[in-house]
Length: 88
Image 1 (cartoon, rainbow, N blue to C red):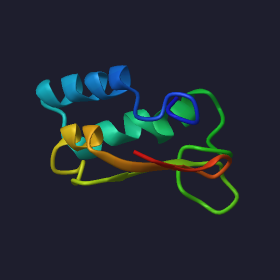
Image 2: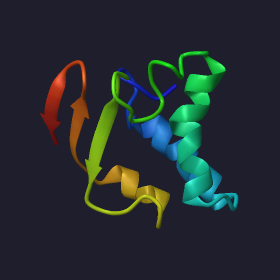
Image 3: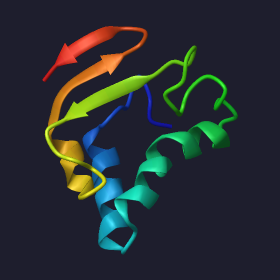
Image 4: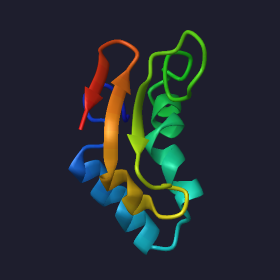
């Protein structure tokens, strides 16, 4: 599950890029790094989407990952609801 400890880690981004190379669209790929893991681990009531009361780790990107998943490599800053802001 993407989250506090592995958000936007290089191995995760590489895996997502492989999905894109295999023909999946970014709109199909991004849920694999967010809500799908939360559903699998039965923690979707606490994380996996941006909703009031949920824990979240967010990234601000310089490019749109819905156009190209490689945009995840261009992180401007990270934000965690539990730990604050981390400029890149």
